[in-house]
Length: 315
Length: 323
Image (cartoon, rainbow over all chains, first blue to last red; front, side, top):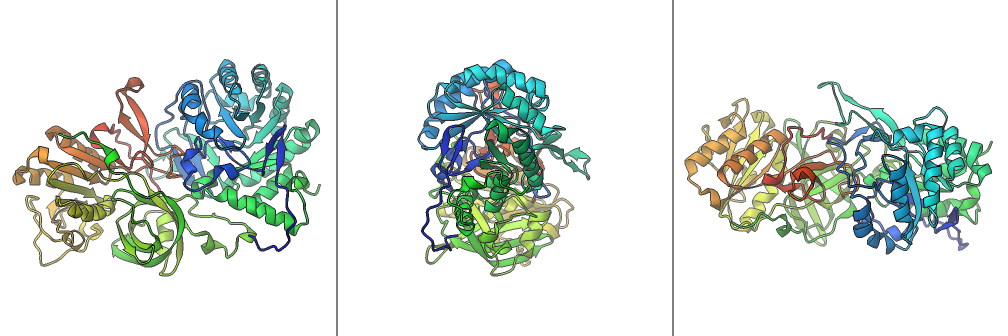
């Protein structure tokens, strides 16, 4: 990086339904805790936005361990939405997040529509929380996947939550574990989603052949990491062309992003912003490297603003 | 009796993410290697802490302009207890890690040569509490639980404790110690001797066991521990036990201590992705009176790896830790 000698400033900022991001690089839910965990390695305030781990109405201990296992170019996880719960989140976590000075996205999960609505209503009151992301696609708890894989139920859920999100923007995270992701994307938009995020993890399983036991205590988990990137790019492309572009709904894309090249790929497919997940575990500075790489890419391609590449893959 | 408190072992250094250079990587016994690497100074680290290792980015690609790919293997970092750390001038240090080749990551590590780079995140986790007020400090290690004890032995000497190391292995050729052939080793477990050079240089004698009886005490290290305790006459209230190794071995050592009122600290191992408290993989179930049902999960990476043995709820499931 920093090889270029031109002084033309590159505009890395993007807009998510009116929420201004200084650059398009975010964290993915569940991979960076509630903020302070990476403070030793990463200046979070230099990101476009920060996305928290899922918050549920009640505190959850999560699944028994083993909760994660590495697979080829990826990992399976079955954490089970372990989190401190809504009240402790508001009491103990918001203070730190509000000091970051960048848009904060809170991932919201629950057992039923009222759970989602109650969490959203409470969080909507907190000024520094810019976007609420409905986690309808966590494959590791039996109570979320139904919403994410059934277009009709998803639209009803989003429509139910919609009136309780007045100040913040409403984002819906789509599951890849469906036959046609454009159907659930359309349902989310019809229900009132202002931003779409995709993809959540792909359901997967690994078995220890010596012991014949599943590698995860939960038997199955969600696959993430570089292994799923082509799937995620494909789904981003589909959702952008079939739903998001015409609806004017921006996409936050994720799935195995390791570097600026991956980020550009997702943006060309139609993503307005990108989120780094699994690779944060390997190197928490990846988002910073991506930001620098995007600047370099824009210089090399004569782009004044990175947003100009959104959806610009050749058709 | 002082309160068992893991807050009295605060490391004095924040974790870093740095590249290191391999300066040695040698086979020390069957399947076990000792790798030594040089990196930015981490001398504020403490025994019990770990480093989280991955291939260096520069090792796979000369320039980031083509985009860093961490894949194919290993993708995630792997956590290893620090087995030794010495300052190397100026502002540098040498870190020892001992590993057994059991999977893709350790196979990668075994392929590293002098001068190669690797990425180091650390030091991470808490450390063994030394300010226990106990005269006698016994280290009980099984298999790959040995490495943190090597560094703890040095720390205990600095703290003026009377240390003894109990080291168990499946068989003699899996014992990752340099044994002095001229020093006798107890076969009934009742005597400790300076037979292992790594401990002897810190004036710590050892009791060694092998499951198959090919060296030292025949059987599990817990058997040797009981035999030694019965013969030694060390008062339980003036003894602290530190243990690291397979889950069943640690549970046994913890049970031995609990039955006698001996203070015990366990260094746990769990499948771990981030090492910094974000991924929530590495949970250890602990007794917690204030929690629902009297227990909760704590994270091995940030609230451990060292736990008060009396708090740990032993499930018999050690976790499928990939190395």
